[in-house]
Structures are given as C-alpha cells and as structure tokens.
Image (cartoon, rainbow, N blue to C red; front, side, top):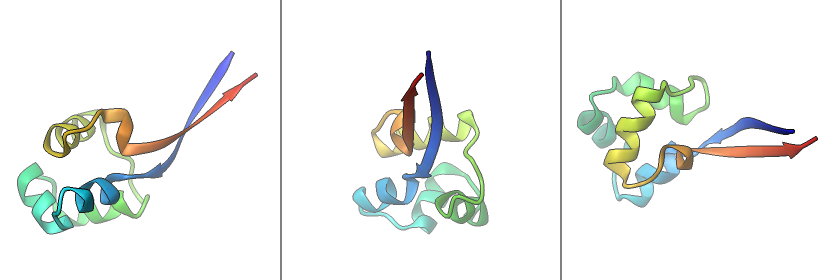
Length: 73
C-alpha cells in the first residue's frame, strides 16, 4: 500500500521562478492577495480549482505546487 501526504507548499518558489511577486500572481490568477499569502505560508491549502489555475499560469503540473511525501507500507 502507498500513503501520500502533502508537504510544504511550493507556490512561492514557482511564482519567484517565473519572475513575479505575490501581487502579480494574485492579479493574474484572480485570487485575493491575502489568500495567496496564506497559501504561500502554508496557512491555507489550495483548492483543486486554484491549483489548476496556478499550474496554467506557472507552466507546471498541479502536483508540482506541493512537496509530496510517499510512504510504502
């Protein structure tokens, strides 16, 4: 059996790699700046719809927005 758990959010890393700041990402994504900040600080978890929008804007896969911990049991 495989167990998967979500680790650290990588959204800020992806935003910075694109050469943007959180405000620019917020404007482009339509997410409120406070929501973007809370996601980047791991205070909120992105909904699938938010992950999808972020992946389109940041040219990555949805699963690239978080670290993933995989345990084989």
